[in-house]
Image 1 (cartoon, rainbow, N blue to C red):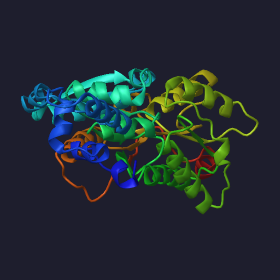
Image 2: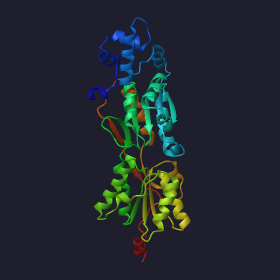
Image 3: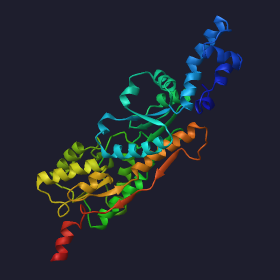
Length: 354
């Protein structure tokens, strides 16, 4: 397939040209109508299969026009309990329901269970108009199959990496992490550790670099490759913080890559008898309900999660309708919400009191 054809949706004309037949003949074959010889029919079907072209029947087109169209939303099974996902889906549902578009939420495993072409064909023939992935398991083969089937893919952080060929929505992760780390540095902290998320998540990599950049500006070198990474989860935050806080040189501040991870940090501190924020400052990332409900309330980087969900649906619908967007990557602004989990570095506070 040529680069030009791979960069856009396949059309019936592509199949007709490749098979050296008229548009009408290709249409007859792919809609299973009479009037075409067996050899020609076999050739057109084979070429359509090789190209990954999916021909929608008149009934399927009618289903889309009748408002029965849906968007497939793929999520990681482990993320179902994360408040981040609830906020994001809330924003997505708000936009979709206002336009009478359905959202069908499935595990990413449902896509992995089929070949990319079979999976994309099934979606197209079921009336899907596109796919939103909220995973770190991006697959170029899945995206190519979707494009060939006339469907749009939109990625949401965390993703494998922002791509020039793929529409994606995220937040200003680097700026958010930089601001969070600067806040801790301004409070006098110098031993500031970062607890990361999924190893392949681009958003986590960018957050780690934001942390490292702020530390470097303060003249502090950090080992970015040594950042503990596993998941944006309570369990990972608990395990990583326990190891850090029981080391020979424990941090006075921990910046966690998600609110869920930060909750694990707070629990590790509680179990070890380390008071927050008097002995340890903690910062999260997301600003979910967890941040406001924690004890103490969590200082965290606010990202507009519901707006990201809204933007993902809007982007998918605009692209599916044929609109050309100026950019394929959109990042919504973050800002730091300072609450009670951060305070002046203990040694500095004691000096002031003395």
